[in-house]
Amino acid sequence: MPALLLPTDPARVGPYRLTARLGHGGMGTVYLAEGEGGRRVAVKVINPGLAGDEGFQARFRREVTAARQVRRFCTAAVLDSDLDGDPPYVVTEYVEGPTLAAAIAERGPLRGGDLDALAVGIATALTAIHGAGLVHRDLKPANVLLSATGPRVIDFGIARALDAADGPTRTGQLVGTPNYLPPELLRGEPVTPASDVFSWGCVVAYAGTARAPFAGNTVPEIFYKVAHEPPKLDGLDPSLSELVGVALDKDPRNRPSVQDLLARLVGHTDPNPALIAETVQASWHVPG
Image (cartoon, rainbow, N blue to C red):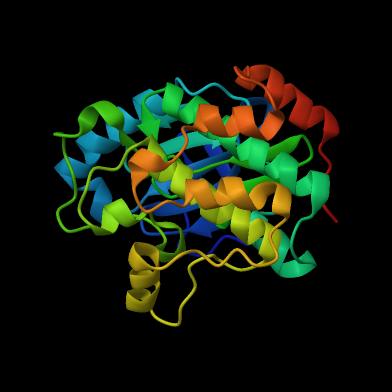
C-alpha cells in the first residue's frame, strides 16, 4: 500500500508530482505520482550512489531502452524516462493491487483456477520480457502485482540485456533475492531466460504453498539448498507440481522454455501469448 512521503522526499521529479511512496530498494525509491492530466504513474528515482556510477548508468540506459519494447500484457509498461536528469528516473504504469507476497501473507496460498491463472500470467509476462531481449533477474512474489485484470510482473530495473553479456556490470554485486535465485548464478555461470524459469517455479510454488521451496534461516543455508537440495513442494496442487519441479532443475539446460511452460499450462502446442493474456484477464479475479 502507498505510504506517506518523507520530509526528505522531493515534491516533484521532472513533470511528475509525487504523492506517496510505493517502495524502496537497493536501486532506488518508487513513488506514486501524477502526470499530465492527472494520470497516476509509478516513478522510480535512482539512488544517488548509483546515479553517479558511470558503469551503472551505461548498463541501466541499455536496459530501459530494451524494457520500453516489452509488450504491455501482464507487465507494467515503461512510459517515460530521464536518465540524464538529477535525479535520473524511470516512469511505468501504476498497477493497483496487492503484491503476491502481501496477498499470500494475508490470505494464505492460492488454489485451483486462481493459482493456474497466476502461473499462466507470469509465464506470459516472461515471454514478453524475453522477447524484448531482457532477463528479469529478480522475479519474486514482491514483483508480482495482483491487479483486477490479472497478475502483472513489475520491476525491470535490475534486468540485464541479453546482448550485454560483455557490457558494464557492477563488480561484486549479487542481484536478486536469495530464495528465488537460480543455482547457476551462485556458480558464477551466465544468467539466461532459463534463470527466470527457475524463479517462475519458485514463485508459483510459494503462491500455492505459502512458503518458498528453498527456505532457510540464513542466506548461506538458503544458497546451499538452492544449489544442492531438491525443492520442497509438499502441498502444491498436483496439476502444477510436476511442471514446477522440472522448472526447478539445477541444470538450466533441462528446464523448459517459457514457451514450453505456456504450452503445457494451457494445453496447446504453440500458444499465442497475447491471446493467453486476454484469456487470463477475462477469467481473473483478485483472490480474496
